[in-house]
Amino acid sequence: MDRKRIQWNTRTKILVYMVLALIYLAGILVWGLLMDPEAYAVDYSVKFLPPGAGHLFGTDFMGRDMLLRCVKGLSTSIVIGVIASVVSSFIALAAGVAAAVVGGKLDSFVNWCVDLCMGMPHLVLLLLISFMLGRGMKGVMVGVALTHWPELTRIVRAEVLQIRSEQYVQAAYRLGKSRMQVAREHILPHVLPVYLIGVILLFPHAIMHEASITFLGFGLSAEEPAIGVILSESMKHIATGKWWLALFPGIMLLAAIMLFDRIGEDLKRLWNPDSGNE
Image (cartoon, rainbow, N blue to C red; front, side):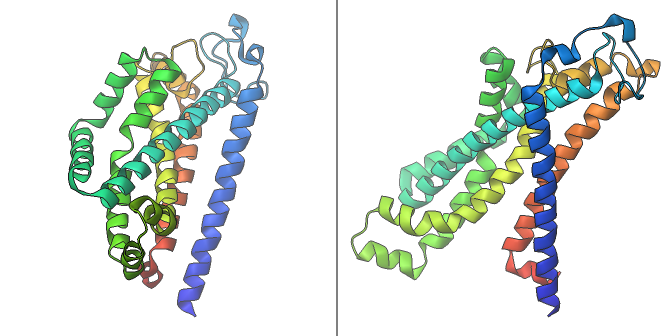
């Protein structure tokens, strides 16, 4: 009875966090995409206003409304994070399944690629790819997508190796089914739960790294209202007491990251049958 109650509570928490995350992110995304650029236009007559009724998050050094800039910037980060994490997860799924099913030289090559990518400092590799592609949204998305697949590839490969030794998989081979058929019919359905958890956990990392390289000046351009740009600009004025320039965009970014990270961790607990003993 206790175990059922623990599992039910975990499922309830997952549902609550998922609904909160979807409402928060969907609202920010739709609001940001539909927002008129004139809403956060330059107005020097109201620059450096502290948070108040007219401007809930205050204004910046150019008189732009910080709430609207943060919403627009976070919506851009969400778009980049979704596209990059989905592409990266597809790479991980294809590489992990192929390496474990085919084996041999292909398995060695995939493992070598994983070790090569994980052996380099993650942020440095991301910066190099983004810089080589001319920075901007394209450079950031490609950089994030090409640097976040190795860990998930290892997880998928390990899961496939475990499933491959099961009797029903071996029976399918004896019945004359090809490796592609076995992978599609018997392996992929069992790998999908682990894969979906990996996608959810990739999403906050993608957003965080996009904001990081933009903050360092290697991501989105300064003309775009991105969270990294906003935080970078706030560093020039925070010492003069303009605390709201860094506080509110940081809180919005942190909320998005923590919501999805918590969902991923709860899904991992739910998928692991031993977690019922905790």
